[in-house]
Length: 264
Image (cartoon, rainbow, N blue to C red; front, side, top):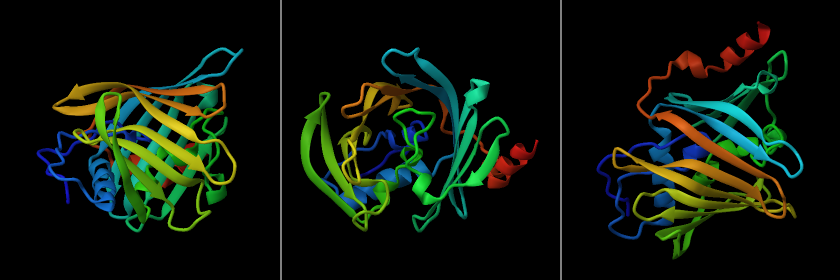
């Protein structure tokens, strides 16, 4: 059953596009596919601008801080998400992801001193973003569109009653992950923890909400920590500003923009 909604609204985008909140209340236990679809629709509809930092920590090395910005806009051809590293200058890059209505995706990347842009083949979607624990494919919540969805249990997490939603890809061996499990707060519909199990023997990856705030009656994730099991590195996404009612021009998320910038 679809959750009742007073006012659906967005928290913060990109990886954070997943970590959304809502003043919604689930009056009855929802069907797993309906819950996944509802959360996906909740954060795909609004336009959004956000700013923050990606902080990467590795033992024995200075902590690295990257300034980031995020734009999202829904267009007839699909939802476009532009994820940019704006500082330091040597690390600048832009990743543009288009998710079409049928679930198909296209990803463009512009990086390097010349800002060279290219359409990424799927085999490169699992590449790390600037050596961090965050992969390019982690910038979307595509697993919520997978056909196999199940609420495997309900349990308390961080003092919150959660639905534990397990998602599996439509075809075994398809994509970077074999399964994704999310602990979703029953009240705010905010994923508080997400565990991704890669294909093969690679170690699983955990996304954990470490900080939240309430804005206009909704719960937002402000800090998300990302860790790869067994690794000593840590990646944090810290969001300092967000506007879920922002107007984003079509041209700002146009793939042609990346190529125009690369030519300058």
